[in-house]
Image (cartoon, rainbow, N blue to C red; front, side):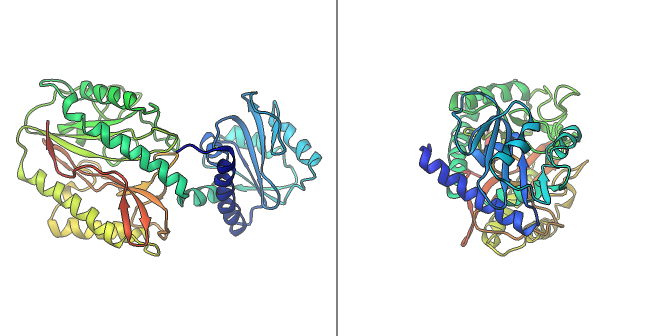
Length: 393
């Protein structure tokens, strides 16, 4: 669903209301946005520049590149950020005592330069209200993620046709990537954080699932190069192993996140038991995941079910374990909230999260599924519709 100009401004205004509400709660008088993800979130466009969001008054877009935008009341062309204070003065904007910058997204040098624009203001972390606003999606954002999930599911239906006997995990991933691009995938997975690198996703087979990763993923994989040690490592797919597919769902600037498992030949009963446990965890989370529930309760119920099944040794990794079972999804793959035992976040309607209880069985591979959910008053509604069971290649 594309937005016409009027609808686009209504959508942007909804987001601004949420941001300003969180700014007020955090005592921030204005935020100067500079990161790509938050520029897209606040303008529904991508440009090099800045978005100035005051607690009182209209937001102003300061655009460096491209030079294709017509000058409007809310849009001012600049060629360097040092022009911003003067332009705000011309517009009659008073500089507030507290100004937020994106501490979580910008480099030290960028923050230092932007601090210099406001020598008389206290500079604070503007990433906090922006992240809080982005946790709860608008109806339009949810529709975008639904569209992503639809395309992602269509690609997963063709995974079995991508497989050929004696191919490597990397060859299978490349074939899936081809189908993704033909389906309309942008070919870029936007992630948050300085230690979260990934290409178009992961295909992890056999013992490679137990290879530890420096990145904060639920599953690792050695990869094929020390520069990107994650995912497929070029091993030949063999009978008796599982193949976990966790590939990109980025089709329109938003993302969906879905994992499913295939097998080559017969696999041990313990793999099926762990996979069924993953499904059981998701069904339980779907039932309790309503507004007002603690995010930590989702983690707690997963741990309880795993303990009842006696699968603790394999849960969320084997040689190296992840300490979360899910995360927010939106413009970036790994948004807030993170589903951990220590989370203080309370579920709200229209939060969107991926939940991924996974297991690593030595000498077999990874099992378990991942769905992207939206929080509703009835519980978690899955947006990624695809069969849960382990399928055969």
